[in-house]
Length: 173
Image 1 (cartoon, rainbow, N blue to C red):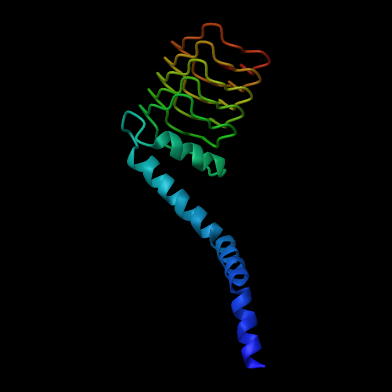
Image 2: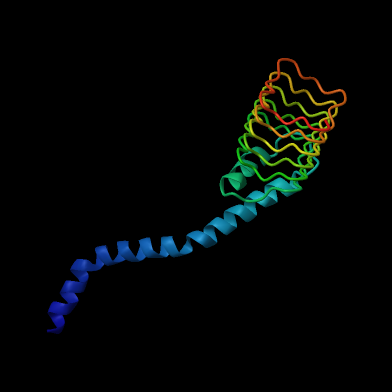
């Protein structure tokens, strides 16, 4: 009867608690992800226009990994060497005077971005969309621009020592 039912519940309490905790964890995941994204955006936006890293590198990588659009982001003068923004959605972003040396921007969409006077040495821009991008005065030494779209891109004063331009689109550049 009753005593056996209570005893059975106590014996199974640990299993019930584990299953309940797992279900709560699974159902709270979207909310946790939103909170983490909000925190990452707070770091990125509070550092807007400041020189240095200020936690932006990790926050931007995390947002990009979650496939969040970073269009229009202001990372002017940021110190972001080696940042991984592969497949990044960075349309109209401002990276003027930023240090992105060694960054992975493979297949990133940087259409209309401002990269004026940026350090882009050894950056991987393979297959990237750089259409209408401002690269004036940027340093692209040893960069990989294979298959990149550089249509209508501004390149006045850009350094391009040993740049890979195989199959790049250079229409009206």
